Image 1 (cartoon, one colour):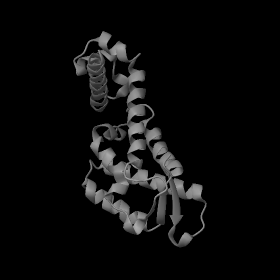
Image 2: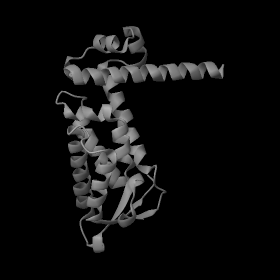
Image 3: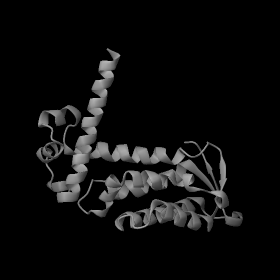
Image 4: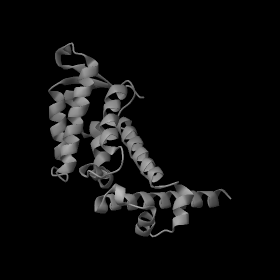
Length: 200
């Protein structure tokens, strides 16, 4: 009985993935507002009744896709770190920027920021999620312990990082993942002495 439930759950997850993929492809092709449920099921090669088993409407699917990807982004940050571990920026490595690897791995989704008529909420939710990561997941130490307004510092750093990410995506990932991480690491060393992962 258990195996049957597992197979069903895998199939349902696969169906949801196909519907999300179809939505992403259609946004790039014709823009979010022009898409109908009929377009989505045709693109994914399912019927309408299958769609409605999983989602109420197009908005429900869009919200589910955005939430799923932002949760993945949030979770990706903690993977290389141990809670409470202090990392000196002079010794940081590629693993500290697992968030970049996550974005590159899921570039099919993150490319949606290049479009005006795109997934609702993406243009605001992505930078806000990055800011929340800086605010809640890390404690920073400035170079020479220069006293600063830490809230401003985190906003400045988070939005700066988002700007670099946005530029990288809109340039169609012109630099390789390794080159991009290297550039970000060098910039980080100019204003952050160390960071501690809170484990949130």
